[in-house]
Image (cartoon, rainbow, N blue to C red; front, side):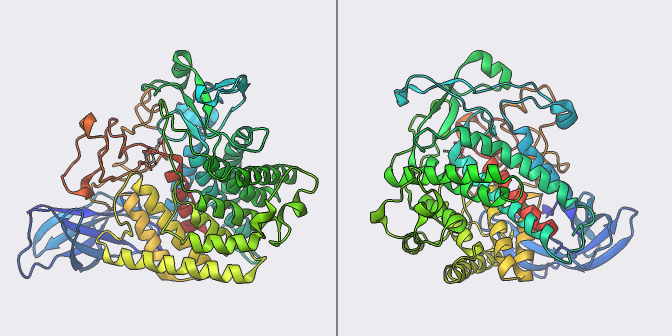
Length: 572
Ligand code: 9MR
């Protein structure tokens, strides 16, 4: 009979819940009276804690029997393993893992730094990038328009992060990634300003340094965003190579093909408006001229979208991803709520903040507050957020603003219902997740659920939310059916063969650290590339192979909520 322990391969923070699982392989049916127990063993071999495994469950996406072990009382920093026994027999035991206050801060540093490695168009010098240093390439400062634009001339679309394992740069996905990182930035500011906060909150965390690095990284993308705005206020959709690149370096890619800019559309323009309005808030105290520039750009973008409310995304996907979305309500809600939060009392929106400019909120659209009330009706929240469904960013903006207490209370209560639903679903799931299905980028979904819990906890504090969120992050770091820590460079089981062009062409064995793999994806869209998934059940739909673009690619919109959730783990 095959048993496996499933646990956080990196380790646990002393005060965190410390839960691990025992899984019996799908074919094994435990006999009556089967009663496993476990011990926690220190590196020197002494048993520091024993308890019974509890709560047998069947996991519906792996067909495994699952038991839970909880060793939360073990708080003494050190290296440990868990060993599950039945009578004299050892059923399974873990590798050594840490209990340490340094774990979450280190993971936070690592996952944030991954954005630096995703920078395009600039040199990454060795003193910052170590062995992953690389020369500037994909400058994109003088690129042509895609033929679909029917437009002469060139454009400067320099900078920004590569979206994922490909060399595309996309506003739609960049926008939600920025918004998520900006949320973390908002909280760092509050944290540092709070009276009586004993600094640093976690002794292993240098919060001012983290905040500086976070803002530097966010600004790198924001400056690219600003370049993507056309003179009329609309925002281009993406910059991409003419054809999918092979696994070549950025420099080799430059030598082999040209890059193009394309697709001014409603979703890209509203994504831009939402993210840039929020940037205004975050950068106000750091660089107010830049903050004003962001806000003006956001308003112009919003005005363009009001006049162009249904311009579809570019359907050209040769050499790039689609990010296709023809529903605009949720993007309008996000942009409006962020702008509402920044600039107005909801009555004279544009005239108040952009007197004399060409910014127009169509008079027939009515006052902004009324529009927001309609948005709230039309766009109920989801459990988390992704590039397609962005309404939660609208709800979050309303929950965090204090101009209108009525809207604040409604938004906070609505999101609290969402958090309670996440907790309910997680309680039913053998691995403690609130996913309804594992889809492309499921690790991003998991991180976003955790982030929702942490945000709601900020106005409605409950250890249930925090514990549930932390247990979800354990899944990303190893407590999962495929026994992988999904973040490169974080643990012995981390991915080595991410679907990532730079990682496969830079001649360095170790992948760039801090990148989260998309993770388990029951849809397996890459079967034609013959990946070796470890089992037939949906929960085994991950493989650490380069061909597995559907499970083993990384993307900025999955890394960003992980950074934000880890920030909350450490500091809030
Ligand atoms: O994250 C995107 C996922 O939701 C879609 O199902 C998938 C297919 O359209 O595309 C994913 O995004 C990819 C993008 O299109 C191009 N860069 C890599 C992204 C991550 O795989």
